[in-house]
Length: 170
Image 1: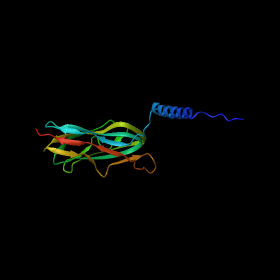
Image 2: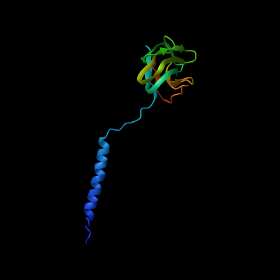
Image 3: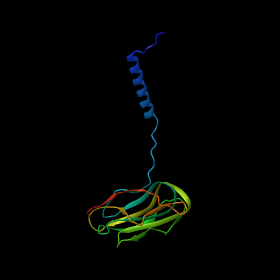
Image 4: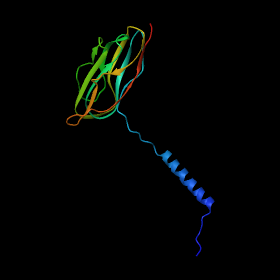
């Protein structure tokens, strides 16, 4: 009995079609990326009338407690006011964020009785007024902490994505 042989050309065509179809199918399926826990402050230009900068929390799950210390260059700007953001129902530590212009910080704490998800919420907003021209990058103080609802709570890792402030001449 004689074995049936597929011509080499047909074998290569079939292999090529299989590879192309697999690549096409992989492109058609939407890619899902893991959401990154992020503390975000956008770039801001601070003119003679001042400007707002908001601390935004993105992509957190099971959050029960937050303390954020936003640091700024107190030789270039002063914080003239600050207000709480739009967090899920919970308790803010104060009626408004604490401003410390001598040390260049604005801080706020928040707690919830159980873990909540924070997809994208403004934690607080600060109004800055200029005192000198220049640039600086916002930073988070060492006391910044975001905790989950475990007993005892665990610190939640996050990526700081902090913008630059440009203080413009009058």
